[in-house]
Amino acid sequence: MKKLMAANWKMYKTWDEARATAQELVDLAASKLPEDREVLIFPPFTAIRAVSDAFADADGFSVGGQDYYIKEEGAFTGEIAPRMLLDAGAEFGLTGHSERRHVLGENDEYIGEKTAYGLTSGLKVVFCIGEKIEERKAGKVEEVLEHQLRVGLKDVPRDINPENISVAYEPVWAIGTGEVAGVDEILEAHAFTRKILISIFGEKGNDIRILYGGSVKPANCGEIIALDNVDGVLVGGASLQSESFSQIVLA
Ligand code: 13P
Image 1 (cartoon, helix red, strand yellow):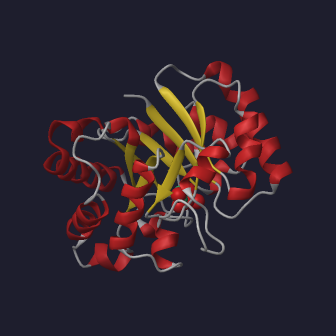
Image 2 (cartoon, rainbow, N blue to C red):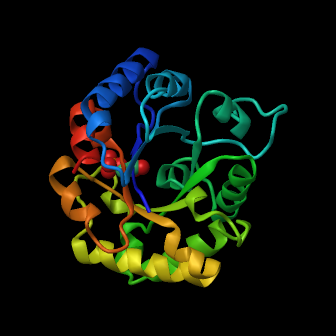
């Protein structure tokens, strides 16, 4: 299984900025990218084509959309359909990100519907889960993760190609705070996620990638990526500069 080194650019970068950063990343990392790694960037919608053009000749580099709506087309002002992402050169979609859950108000049921819809529309999906700090303090990490996984993956076909779905564990308290989860916290959450994935998908659950996200930096990526059940990372702030994200990709 290849490690998935993913960047979520959130609401940062214009077309020109995205194009420049993506090209610099190719220049810094493409020739050195190990066989067992893949690079993925989620730019804002307006810059997807800029990044997919920059990645056109770079093996192992792909692009995704940070969100999409659950219809093929129609009167849904402001929304983007999976086929529009695919048309712009994206292969992946992102669902369940904590900012969509907690800032934009998406619930588990809608995230589950969106995850299944993206897959049937031909996207590969990175589905995010993660507990809030008060849930961790109350000893509810497993309860929260299990609920998010079971509802979020409810309509995903059980015979899915495991390469098409990944889970990103992003503890909300570690996102954008500089406070990375400890090794034991990552190990426990990822082992638990693996157990639930196997209970849902059987043996295939072993082949679904589990990414860690939350304050990943060049200085901590090497340690995190080597942990059991860590099959990639999802990076926010430290992915915005090509220099630091290239160090993460090659860590
Ligand atoms: P940071 O790397 O900035 O903590 O963000 C993580 C994240 O939300 C990636 O989706």
